[in-house]
Length: 352
Ligand SMILES: *[C@@H]1O[C@H](CO)[C@@H](O)[C@H](O)[C@H]1NC(C)=O
Ligand SMILES: *[C@@H]1O[C@H](CO)[C@@H](O)[C@H](O)[C@H]1NC(C)=O
Ligand SMILES: *[C@@H]1O[C@H](CO)[C@@H](O)[C@H](O)[C@H]1NC(C)=O
Image 1 (spheres, rainbow, N blue to C red):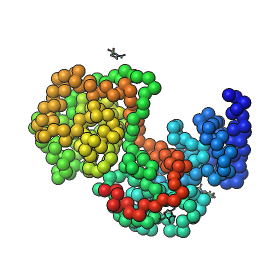
Image 2: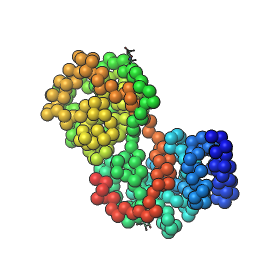
Image 3: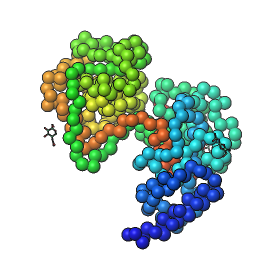
C-alpha cells in the first residue's frame, strides 16, 4: 500500500508547487495540502498521468457577496472540499476565473450590476438563486448569458438545497425532545390574502396554535430550536408554492427542532423526492382544515402513532445548518464535471 502511494504524493506536491509558482496564489495553505493527501489520493494520481494539473484547477469568483454577507472563503468543509478549488471575491481575478457566480438578488436590480467587461473564453457564468420564483424579478436579464444554474431546483446544474439527509453509519436511537405544547408557527410576513394565513384562520378554530415572529410573540433566531422543540408540530408553510421550493421552514425550524412538520408547499410527491413519506404531514392530504386539526389532536393523544413520524431518524439524519460557503464549494466541485460548453437560453421558462 505505502509504496504504491508514494509517486502519487510526490507528483501531488509537484503539482502544488507548480500551481503556487505559476499562479502565485497563496490560498493553498499547508493544511490544505495535508488534507488533500488523505481524501483525494485516487483523483490526484489520475491527474498526474493525464493532463497538466494546472488546467484542472478551478477558480470561482463570487461576483458579489450574497446579500452583502461576507464569510471566509479559505476552506471548504468536508465533504465539499476539493484540492483544486479556489474561491475568491476579488474581481481583479475576473480574467483568470473559470467561473463567475452571479447571485440573482444582487444583480437583478439593474443590468449595470452584471459584469460589464468581455467574458474570457471558456469562462462559465453561474446563476445562483435560493429565492422562490415569486421573489426573483428580472429573470430575463440572464437570457443568453448564463451557462450553469445553481439553485434549490433538483434539476439545476448545481443543486443547492436548504437542507438534505445523510445516511447514518450505524442505526441511531433518536430521542424525541420533550414536548409540552402542540403547534408552533413562525411567520414574518403576515399577508391575510395568502393561502397559509387563510389556512391558519381556519385551523385555529379547532386547535391551539402559537405564532412567533414579527407582529406576534418575538423570537430570536438563535432561540428557534430550543423554543420550537417543545412543540409536537411545526407549520412549515412556504411563502409561495413552486417546484422543489422547500426551505429552512422545514429543514431548520421543524427538523432541527425535532418537530413533526405540517407542510404547505409543492405536492406531497415533490417532498417525497427529498424526504421520507412518513417524516411529515401534508396539508393537501386532508379535505378540510377541520380534518387536519382532528388528525393532529388524534396524534397528540396517541404517543405510539406520533412516534412513527420519527422512525426514519434511525437511518437518516437531516443536515439543517444553512451555510453560504457550502453552496459555493458545491459550485467549485460541480465545475470539475461541467460540460465544456453549455448555455441556458431562458431562465424564465424554467424557473417558475
Ligand atoms: C485582488 O487581487 C489583486 C491581484 O492579484 C491584488 O493585487 C489585490 O491586492 C487583491 N485585493 C484584495 C482585496 O485582496
Ligand atoms: C431507544 O431508546 C429508548 C428510550 O431510551 C429505549 O426504550 C429503546 O429500547 C431504545 N431502542 C434501541 C433500539 O436501542
Ligand atoms: C456560456 O454562455 C455564453 C452565452 O450563451 C456562450 O457565449 C459561452 O460560449 C458559454 N461558455 C461556456 C463555457 O459554455
